[in-house]
Amino acid sequence: MNTDMTRPLGRVAAVLLGFTAATACAASPAQIVAAARATPFTVSYASGTAALPRPTGSHAVGRATMRLVDARRPDPWEPSAGPRQLMASMYYPARPGTGGPAPYMTTEEARLFLQAKAPGAAIPPEKLSGIRTWAHTDARPALGRFPLVVLSPGLGFPRATLTGLTEDLASHGYVVALVDHTYETSGTTFPDGRTLACAICDKPPKGGPAAIAKSRAKDISFVIDQLTAHRPAWQYARMIDPKRIGMAGHSIGGNAAATTMATDHRVRAGVNMDGTFYAPVPATGLDPTWEHAWKNLNGWKRWLTVADSDHSTFTDMPVLSAWAGKPGPGLSPQRAEQITRTYVGAFFDLNLKGSPQPVLTGPSPANPEVTFQNP
Image 1 (spheres, rainbow, N blue to C red):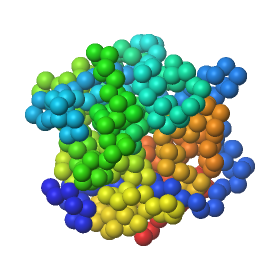
Image 2 (cartoon, helix red, strand yellow; image 1 turned 180 degrees about the horizontal axis):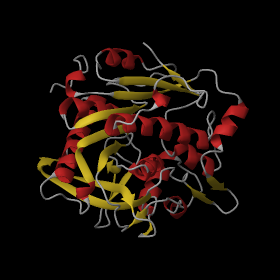
Image 3 (cartoon, rainbow, N blue to C red; image 1 turned 180 degrees about the vertical axis):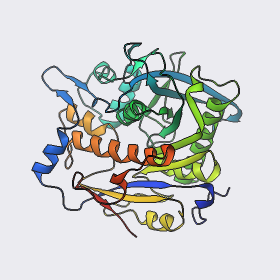
């Protein structure tokens, strides 16, 4: 399939849900506080510890990490490195009481992330890497087969920054492949102890965002190949229903979701969280590239904006910023996490499980910050 966004994606069963940052009128403080109380959340400035919001689904969550090597493809950003190598974290519905606590990220990943995003901050890397998560390593899988969702982070963001959303999806009955795109994140640690830093963050490659998105589409298709092969790369791959696959991404990862859907028909549903379509993010207002792309999406679709959000609202960054003592303006971390989980989860429940979702039919009094766009 041609990846040109001027062509309709509907014939590959494309469905796209988009979040864009907006500065529309916010809900009243009382409404936001009442809604935020529904999501457990812990930030302790006194002890210097933090926890991601507890998953809201009924399943316990397991996690495993795996290294994948595409022997047929040289690394696009560092050809001297040899074949393209990726790290992915597999999150899955698990049996309660099995496995041990999963770390947020490695200490070296945390050091490089802090160096990139918070230079000069007096935060020990081990404090960041030790943030409480809810997944368990080596947990026994739950019985059954589940839809697969692949998640792709923003450029320069390690995959860990989508952990809150990932754990929640797994708790609601999804297998989730959270992928690090090597040399596109602040740091990716491999099983041999090497941590590879970003090679294209300061100097984008020839072709710009479009080249990155196309490369990521190849990464994602390779990951799906490895998970659905006759002899899959992951020991619990039997949990995956290969006929129900979706993808979500933040920033360039959202761009990559659309690109992947145009080239890989196995991906039935895609979520773009504040990603452009081959164009720079404007300084203010709505992204004009969405209006062009929207007209060429003729599958089921929704375009949502969230008042008082910013580019990182749909990641763990609001939680991390508050923990570091520098909370951002606008939505509280609790509310940002709750809105993201609610709408992304509902989108996949509708399109991969066939479960009706009233929250996607129009504005909701419970979510006054969310506006349904009709360009």
